[in-house]
Image (cartoon, rainbow, N blue to C red; front, side):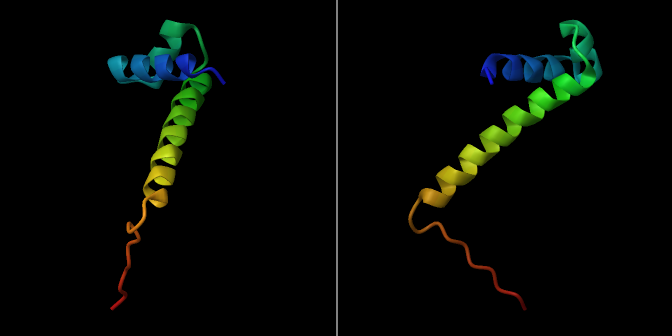
Length: 65
């Protein structure tokens, strides 16, 4: 999917602080805007998680006590 619609949806939602308002401005359904924003977020999160996992010595240990 082209990234521009996802980024545009995010910017509109941030500016208006509303997925519904962003959808109205773009003449889209609220679910389309929400899906685009979430898709971009998940893609970005996935890349960050992969980047962190690929660095040597970044393992975190957790102790249960």
